[in-house]
Image (cartoon, rainbow, N blue to C red; front, side, top):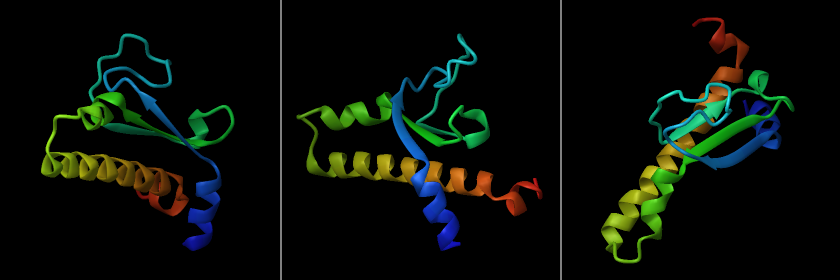
Length: 101
């Protein structure tokens, strides 16, 4: 619902992290590989939704030698990653959804 999205949007925190490490620091040495990750509010001290995008996903956009079509594809990938993590945050916070898991 629109009210739920408005409530979540007030508590979203975005960050950049290493896509091969646990962004929470709770599991040092854990080997991961991700483009983005959503941390639910029950795992955050301030009850915020945290969304991290890997710098490995963003870094290619800083390359000045890439062509316009490659740049557009990379931008699309970043946008899809962020959208995916927002949807994950929304669904994981919806009790009616998580009760069915």
